[in-house]
Length: 119
Length: 113
Image (cartoon, rainbow over all chains, first blue to last red; front, side, top):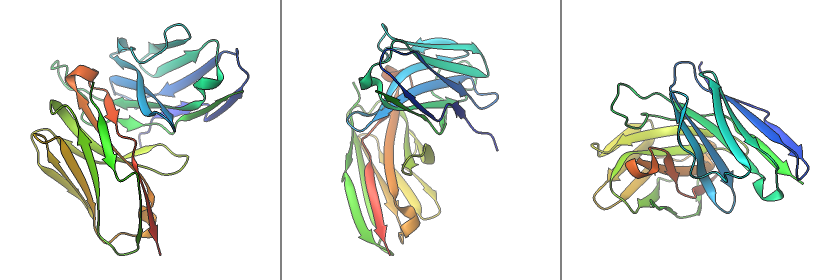
């Protein structure tokens, strides 16, 4: 049963500390998304990769957030320094795009999320 | 920017009732529309995906319709059960969002025994 995995599932940290969240997409998927969910804003896109290349990170505060895909089996989202307003649930999702059409993946499969609390 | 709205924000119904959840979006140039389910403290589970060329999709007691020209979708749940209690999220992807999903705020459903 293929699943997207995320670690850690929960993280409590103090303001100013670095936070790194990891995602393992479903094997063979070539598209990875990072979303953030808060009560006020709902689910918002932070960054989006295809074939490990970043295609859209316009939703991310560039001064403190960074997203990378060191290899096809790992995506990371880093916050440095963290702030209380970063407290949220961070979801990773993966999907598969066929061919070279550049269109969206048919379905995005979501991980369980990382629940982050910055004190 | 694509705006997705879901009505109602919350809904409580007795078990056995049929119900309809509504979703509207502002830009009709979408590729797909998806309905997700989210249980408290959990991730998202995809329920139904409707491609822009399709009108509806069905899975068990769930039926989702899409009227792309008017920017609307409905999720119909037949014979609701307490296990259907969850938040239901509607999302669309389009060229301008880079194919990322634009989500509504969700409808929180409670089905009482």
